[in-house]
Image 1: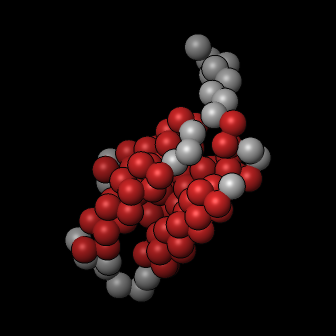
Image 2: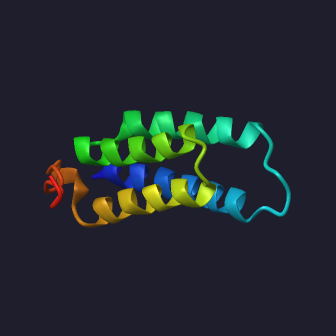
Length: 99
């Protein structure tokens, strides 16, 4: 339970950083995305379940693809929702209706 709580705290801090980056008046430069990438990697390593790890990797992919900070934050919000909904169970998401 403590690991899950700590993961949630780290996730919330990262979401706050990404939101600040999204709403910054000036260009964040190259430093902040590099720091966020480093934190995402560490968070993925700390994920207790494959589902949570997959969600963090979606955020990493969004960052790597050059998507907006808003897209990265959205992926992290999904991870937080999975965590709150019992993501520690490691259940795989249902298959896509399209395939």
